Image (cartoon, rainbow, N blue to C red; front, side):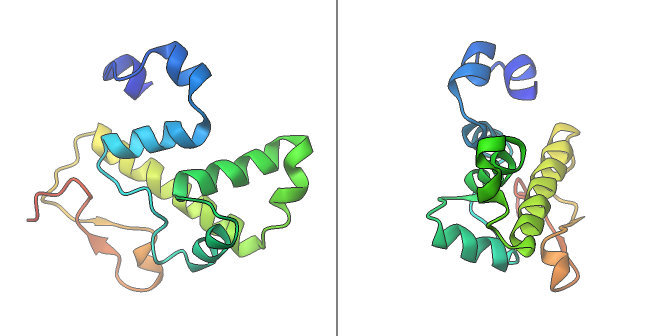
Length: 133
């Protein structure tokens, strides 16, 4: 909705019919200035993605999601260990949180609690659109 209706960056037809799920997520990440790579803190997902030649986080999320909800692909979803699916869900939630913060004009000079880096430490950091405060 945001990229099509508010920003006018894509036509509804292109976004809905011509772009795959991973490309839609990549478009959103580009708009919020977030690197689509899989963060270091998601070790299981990074290893699995590397082993399966997934190029980035959006592809990992889309592949795991498609395998889980489309019957012919379900067997592939369950080939992934549970910690890989968990990491993919953490990544999707993180993207969603950052998109909401950006949409709500969260300032770049205020830290937020990053759910991924919080796994190994305090997790407080500035959002990707930070001006380096």
